[in-house]
Structures are given as structure tokens and as C-alpha cells.
Length: 139
Image (cartoon, rainbow, N blue to C red; front, top):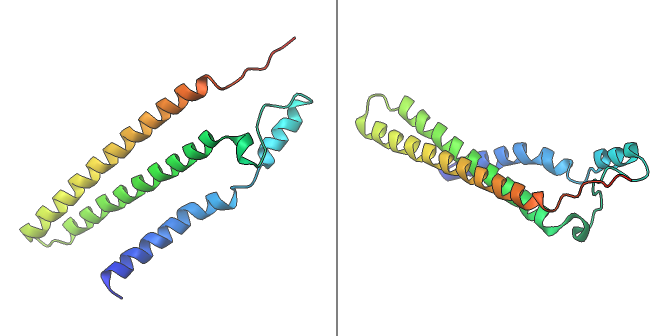
């Protein structure tokens, strides 16, 4: 098995291990239904409808963005670990050590960019959602 096939298979298995539990619980609205039942006739305000028009396109896009940012973070962490592995196995070869240092530097820069983009996303999401959350009116 060539090197590309090994890397591809490893990433495929890692992706399946990380994302399959999320997919299994994707259609589980039990918790929202239970919370609505516990709140009484008015409900707790949790939208448990399955169609896109009720859940909103913005929430779906937000979920896709969160998954994408998480996946990129995993890739850059693996890239940094790969650079550390190269450095540990360089056996004093200066060329390999230089390559490993550059890979680790690029990985750390990538992780920093991903963390900053996640922070920017969360700030924007919270600002946009602040105007859409309705508070219950008590009479």
C-alpha cells in the first residue's frame, strides 16, 4: 500500500470515528420534546419540527460552518503531530529537522487561524441570534 493510500485511509477512518456519533443522533429530537412537555401547555420554546422552513436555513448553515471549522482544526492538529513525528525520527539529519520545524510552524499558524475564525464565527452568530430569540411574555 502506497503512502497516499495509507494517509487517505487513516483520515477516512478518523473522520468516521469522529463524525458517525454525530450522524447517529442527528434526528433525535427527544430532548427538545421532553423539555416542551415538561414546560406545560406553552412549551419551552424549542423548535422540534423536522422541516427546513421551521428550523431555519441559518441554523443549518451555522451547523455546516461549525463542522467545517472543526474538521479544519483536526487536520491542522494532525499536521502538527506529523511534524513532531518527523522531528523525533529525524535522527540528527538537519534537512529533516528543518522540514519538520517548518511543518510544525505551519500547523501552529493554521491552528491559530482556525481558532480565530471560530471566535469570529461565534461572535457573529451570537450577535445575529440576539435579535431573534424571543422571551416569553407573562401575563
